[in-house]
Image (cartoon, rainbow, N blue to C red; front, side, top):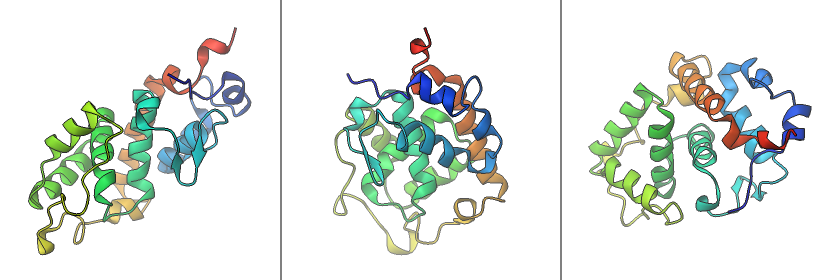
Length: 185
């Protein structure tokens, strides 16, 4: 499997070591900044706007999780159905708290099963998510049409800050999966 972790020298040059200090300085935009530094601007990552061009299975678990939660911020609801399995899987792995509960409740209200979506992604990350014909939508109860999107659109919303803090802490705990620390030798 290819190693798409950020090279140690690049992480050092950016001041990301030892504790992601430049990202910590702007915690309200932590997810976007983590994604930019560790995936979008990573010279090892095969990337074309707006996402990595490699299959999800070539990313390690932590990179896939960062990619999934970053999409939650980058793509304001309504989310395209094919992105939802990766986002849900990532949100559960990272542990984004009550925001995840809200999202899963809305998905259940539409007649879809978040557990099945996560299980399908976990078993085969490269399999596309549900298409329009597979995604159930009950119009007035569609999970995102009338969803409260304030936390996505306002960086001052407390849930937005909490989301960013949880993702930051997850990435900090899994730094060796994101930065090639073994190259420091």
